[in-house]
Image 1 (tube, rainbow, N blue to C red):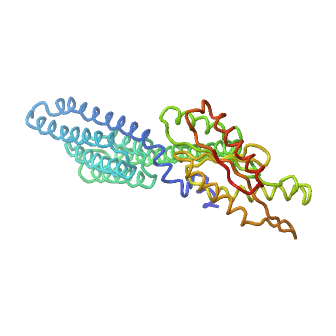
Image 2: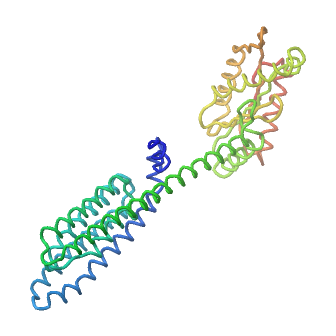
Length: 375
């Protein structure tokens, strides 16, 4: 039961933990700089109280001013380092170091006050602020907050004099209440952040999956005609502007109608899927492969001359010719006709290039199929 409740409160992100820390890094940095600035200004504001408490001892006020100046300088250096960092571990170490330094500073600051003077306001605010504002793991925040409270109560009970027991007990009770409220608030804040991140990742994955499915042909796992043409147009514009080599293959399964008529459409689908897998295996990572319609496919080859494109086409042709497709008890042998064209000055649009490659593919069919033709 405890494990179930714990899993509901502390959201386990598993492998996404690192992504979660990186995702919130810039927000955490901005928030950290804000609360370090507030702490720095508050410490500077104590200078006026030093002047009131030690009006008759100006040399002590000077030392206290120097003491607070060290804290301010250290905080400015930490803020500068935090603002420049881009690594989560470095950021967390800086925050942990600054919080530890601040806790020690405030505990020592307690000794600068008269022996009968309690710093109750600071003693209550600091643990609560650690729980609520610190971006560190909740376990780190607990150690820091309890460490500060333990030091404060130790000083109050063993170094302060002239304070009645009722006031000391009230201060101790206030610490316990603040820890309960701060811990509950910190857990809720961190749990909400983690749940929000998890929901964001799920939504992002769902959108990416939907976009992927919208752009991928479900049967052949190639790009849809619309997505293929979108990329092809961009590639052609790059060719037109920078005159970068650019070739295209148009591939068409031979005697595909006979396969459908003889073995059925189910077999035809398996043949197309197998052909598509062969093309995907033979293409390079930078190539774009899509289904133009029916049993016809296109393969964009950026940074590729005609002779290089012919090599790719022949590799696909040979690989498919040597890849029989098994359908139930039947073994279907199929071939492919391929037309190749390289973008040239005569092409005014991608359509012009595609028409030339398509024309070569039909010439390959007229010449007997299972061959590669080019201009």
